[in-house]
Length: 232
Image (cartoon, rainbow, N blue to C red; front, top):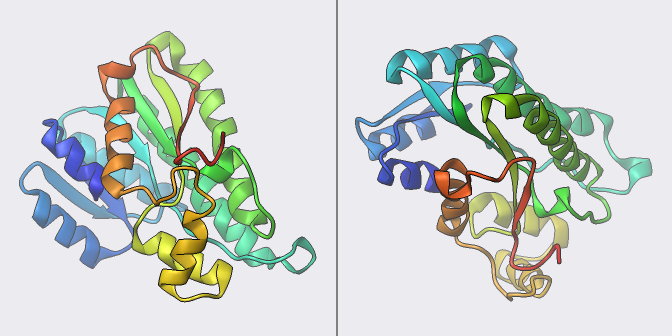
């Protein structure tokens, strides 16, 4: 939603896609007439294709694609890591980004921008997150392939790599990872970040706008960390 708000503020029209109808409906209502929404499971090819086509039908063309769907996945040592959780994490992050790009590319204007949300652990790694880290690294491989493939059309493809963000998703991850309550878990993670704090959602959104805009017109195939120094 922070990214959608930032795009709307720049004059964009936005289609929100995700699995939670109440959240989509509320988000689009907040954003106003420049926004639309569609319930979409990114692991389902037909649903992703329908969402892309709905955006084109509603707004006339497609200039920017943001592959942002994600789940935290399981945690645990590799010998005990649940296979179904691994498969689901790969499906949402990697298959989801692949399907969105597959169905969006035929509709993209020349000079368009594709942004795939990876993570700081798509540049680094940590113990016990085999599913999530593998998925986030795999998104970089997808991005680099598409950056080379789509360069003749001047379509730019980049990944963004947020560190810990002050949002509900991250708080749940931290509580599960540390076994501590929210405040204590947040402090533990703050101590891992060279800048000593979590990102605000708007800080990630501004980097998204940068990658979508002509301000980054000579950037493609790039991994952009917005992680407070964690990957340095």
